[in-house]
Amino acid sequence: MLSLGPIIFGLILGLVIGSQIKLNVSDTRFTLAAFIIILIAGIIVAWQSGNFPFYTDLPVSTAFLSALIGIFVGKLIFARSK
Amino acid sequence: MSQGSVILKLISLPISIILICLGIMTILGGHITPGGGFQGGAMIASGIILSILVYGIGNSPLELSHTYIEVLESVGALGFVIFGLIGLFVGGFFLYNVGADLLNVVPQSIQNVLHYPDVTNAGIIPYLNIFVGLKVFVGLTSIVIAFAGFKKLTEEGE
Image 1 (tube, rainbow over the protein chains, first blue to last red):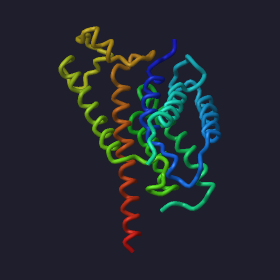
Image 2: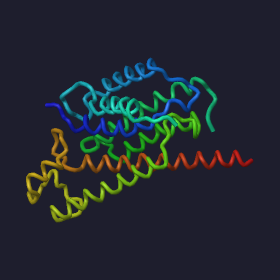
Image 3: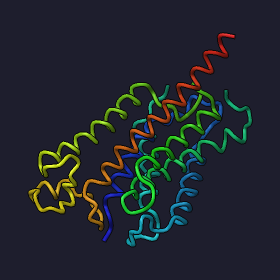
Image 4: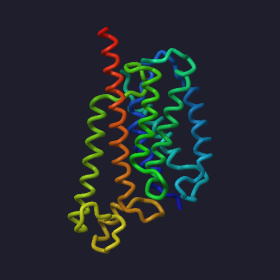
């Protein structure tokens, strides 16, 4: 059975924090490719974390993955430029 | 304040995002693994602090506004107190775990609403972890933002 708790609250916390990412303030450019690399790195970290915290539904950490997706979605939807 | 290295600037935001995700994971596993609200909140704050230290205050892609800090700090404190009061009024004790309900004094409807949706019988403990995590995350970050701001003001004054 898939545990919904870490998925829902990981998404919410990710949305809350991702809404503060502003990319137009730094002199370093982060393009779509950079975020795809971050997503792939995040999936690898989630895979290496295993089924944390001991939920045996999926072989990846669902809290980590949902937080990562939440940050990206929050950045896309809610992030305002400075 | 900011470091000039291009490599640091390229790698800091991805590491910050990964650190923040690890912090959220620690918060959400706090009821059955080592860790919890404070540790997870400190990990999230460390991600944002890394970004502020490398890019500098005012140029950081991950920087919290005053209103945001105010709102999250209030939500963290209020949420904890509200969950405590729910336990007091429904179960008879402050911070009584109405989701798990070991004494069988809480109506089933309230227990269902406040029960954390996972395979453990943790009740309201994960919610309290989330509120503590929010409060610690904005608290620690605001301290560093204040220090960085003071340093910038001092440097501008000289």
